[in-house]
Length: 472
Image (cartoon, rainbow, N blue to C red; front, side, top):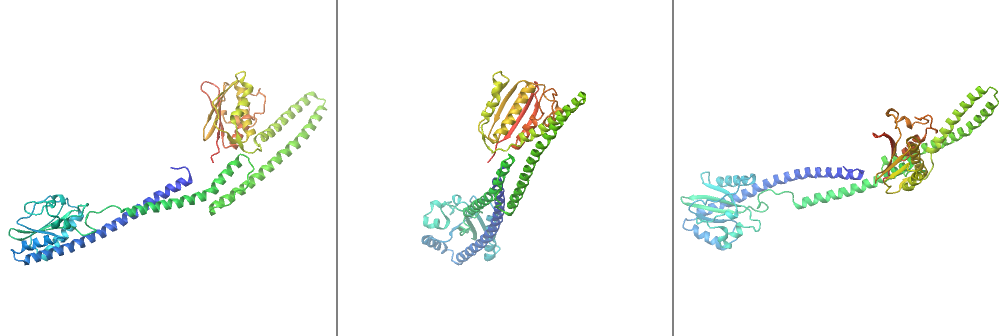
């Protein structure tokens, strides 16, 4: 199945058109063939009446005059039938009987018996022109003068079947009548769809697909703009409202997106102001408390208060740093990740604590400083807890993937998600706020990506950063 809305709509439209055209063509073809069968029976009846008139005419002639009249008819040429007198019925290879041949044979036999008498001995058969025999001697059609029978029995290059009727007039006298069915029933057997009908189906299908394609493309343009704006907005860019254009449903989606964008922008502004106020308001009382603690005479109590104030200040700084590091207001631009990785790994390359495998194939559309902080946190964590880091780059047209393998003890399976929580640290003796992995994951999420952890069998931890590339 195509992935795009346009491709799926065109495929669905094509299937519907083919099914509808196929059903309508089958119905039309069935009706056409039914009308053809009726016309064929009517033509066969008319042909049989003409035969019966010819038979009645020859029966009215004296026996001695009959060959003379036949010679005159052959000399004139262009007659509807080829007629001859034989002393016995000619034996020829007949064509296989089909429904239409059987219908013609039944109609001709019925009319001749009705007009000439039920007791008449009549043989009606269809014969191929190549197997046709004319006289008692078994002459073929090609062996006769063209004026005798070719005009009545050939229709080159089609060579349709010949209707051969043999009627017993008297003892040892058989009247032989060979003829073709009139147009358009000369070929007798039903044909498939005419070329004009097939051309009409192809033309209507192509026009319908063209108009449907243009309509879907026109209606999907606002959706593409909306998707691009949403993508840029998810990266934190300051995006303008989307144009409310297209169909009513698309306009409603654009209106809802603009309302959501305004609410999110207002929320982010209020959150930034709130943390600024918290940062300003908390530092002053903490500083005052430290001064008052210094005035305490009880050293044990002074130490307890100082420890509590240190923890409080640590929590405030950690929260503010988390907000500062994840809420980075940058414009989205092409970022050379090869250069970013080179700068971040350069301090550790000399002593071999960091090795790099692979290369980024193309610039990545994102926030430069945020991506640098994200990758830098992953490398610093690997060096801090695993002593060494091996960076493996897997880049492609759909996503950029960075695997950071260390040689540390790894992370317990039940703690693989917990380490992303703020202020959580497995090694309590290590310095820091416990925010590095959480900040890296938040930055990855803001770019539509993910950070995941995996304990390696040979020891160590693998941190995988996956960032999807912006698909236009």
